[in-house]
Length: 225
Image (cartoon, rainbow, N blue to C red; front, side, top):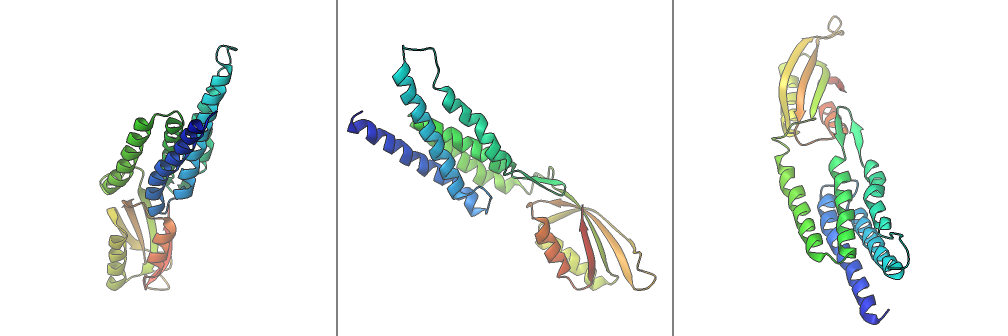
């Protein structure tokens, strides 16, 4: 192996870090669990495995029926374990699916760079960045799997009601339905039970919603289903 070969290997590894970093930067900017470092490492590792696969094939070509390229093939399935760890269920919402898919694609980008397919790797990186950046803005129009059932017990006065509606508006919640009735404590105090069916358009975390609503004067209890 000459110096030119080492230069090619080093160049591929560096390019994989750059392309993985571009995708990872977008994830990091949105505070996702798999951010800059995770995506860079996945892309770099995949690139190294592809280089290793090619080198192994070169050493056994014509000597055996073994297929060293299977080593790279295991990246595609093996990365699923890492992606599965990024998927979480919060109430009725499932989060982390995009992050898991992103890791899988980044692994493919690394394999492409390792194989020397720079055009495919760069084009895929650009498309992934556009998809993540542009389609994220359509979340407010795509309300699939973002439904929340919100139950509150509050003091029965108009000011509290107005503050709750303002809080939901600030959290970018769309109200599908609302129901109000006397609460179990209404006999001993002036309280009411509120039930909202909401669309969580911006995928706000439940902890953020709870903290915001509990900060409203007059809110006694909050429950999210």
